[in-house]
Amino acid sequence: MASVQTRVGPVSYADHGSGPVVVALHATLHDRRDFDPIADELRRHYRFVTLDWPGHGESPPPEDPFVHGAALYADVLTDVVAALNLPPAVYIGNSVGGYCAARLALTHPDRVAGLVLVDTGGFLGSPITNAYCRFLGTPAVTRALLPRFVRSYMQARGSHDRAVLDRVTERARTDEGVALAAALWRSFAAREANLRPEARQIAVPTLIVWGSKDTAIPVRFGRGTQSAIPGSRLEVLDTGHLPFSSRPQEFLGAVEPFLAEVFSAAGLN
Figure 1 (cartoon, helix red, strand yellow):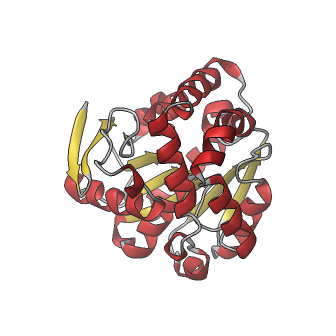
Figure 2 (figure 1 turned 90 degrees about the vertical axis):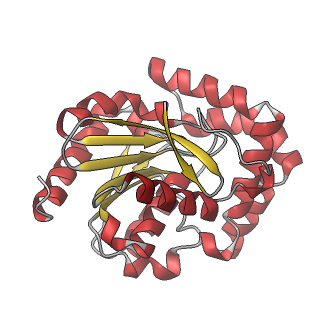
């Protein structure tokens, strides 16, 4: 696979199709294959870019496993966008990927045409949720709970969901996976991982898609994210944490009109 150099080492990515650019960003312990159920359809109309976060998929880990964190991944995304010299794109971000996409819209608005935030992190900050993130980010807790937690938030249905569940559960049982997941969860308790105070500065069109059965980031946080970002719209699907994997046609039914509208308004069709 192709790769680009970032501040923490090489990051692998896939880049297929042509036209306006759509970039998809996956969740913790997952990889770019999560988006396979929607990839073929999007590649018919767009240049579709997916990447593996450091230590995920085909991207090697940083030397220091404790360096993993939401803010660092957002910096890595900035490096990837610059290295590929991407034009203004729509970013589909799931979980930590949503945080990274939203932060890019704040720090480099010229690079972002629109956002599709899917069961996203980054807008959860409160004393209670920070304590929750620190609790889940305690390595002993992570090790004990993570495999069952993955099964709970996935709410897997269909062969692709089950394949994702198997991959993530296998990683969740390794020392490396535990260290990575714990560091990322802890990072969401840090001040820089809370985008809520800046949410009103997000000026690009934003579609929020949430799974009603998500136990990792329940749908009430989707409603809170929608209320925080001016002009954003919320679509709730009957899924867990990965609507694009569990209900790909319903997900595309919400996202494709949004993409067409955004790129048409930006003169990028």
